[in-house]
Length: 159
Image 1 (cartoon, one colour):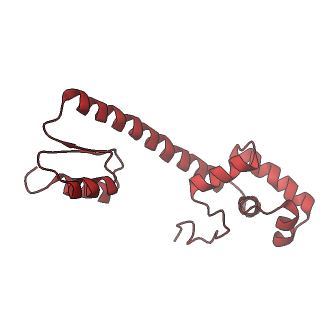
Image 2 (spheres, one colour):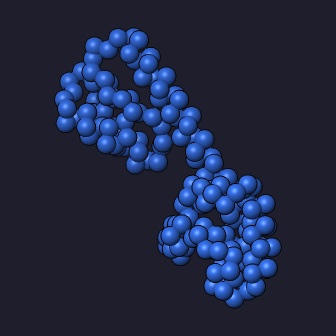
């Protein structure tokens, strides 16, 4: 491309929020350039001349990784939607569970009975589609909920 090298194109693509696997193919690369490209998220750095097989192998890997990334993004959105459907109290119980708090401690923290926490816990597990507490924690991590307990809006990326 005139006036742009591959690293600049890569930067501009990422700056626009496009998340695609990037393969850098260059006629004059060096180790520094390769390291920069890989640190910026390129999945491969290939110097010309490149064999057809090598290029096809790299493209196949990019397609596989791109599909994985798309599935990850969709999963994050889906889990975020499920969290958004929780009532305020269910969200509070969810956060207590993700922090590793027992029902008894969660009840104390929320000023409700242990039995009430159990009811909300069942509702949370059902609404989230979680079959275990570890599954619920994994969902929280995927969605970006801080398992160490910083559930403030700023920690969740809200404004």
